[in-house]
Length: 182
Image (cartoon, rainbow, N blue to C red):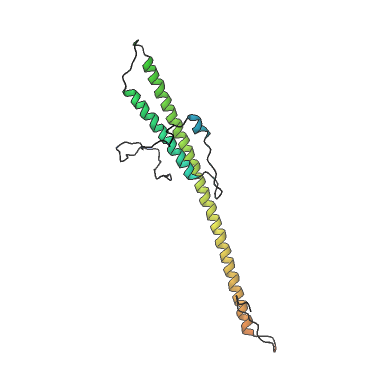
């Protein structure tokens, strides 16, 4: 089950929260202004240089804002449903308005769920790519380390051989220890 950086599990199912509800209690940012559909549609996340994909913290922050906006809209809708219908003419206008509002909220909720699912899918794909890329880099570095160790062993063998053979006829032995500079 994917988990965002804020620590909420997001698996598409409602889960009880400490306050007794089945949806998280989220608060809108400092301005208190809910998201507009255009802001959701046009949101652009910064890419990260270390790996391909979106900045996970930025995606999680945006998803929290989408959730807070939906939570606010749903609360306002529930509040409007509890108010008595005020129709001086006694016609069906309030009922039509309520039905249109419910349809709008349902459509917005579905659209937000699709956006959230798409963002999560992209974030998970980016994370998988980053892990794969990191694994390839690690394997390459480990291969280089193995090659360098083999080269070092070969050099030590040659140094030992040169030391064991001694200097050519009558010359003093050179200092052949690796790492000695004298």
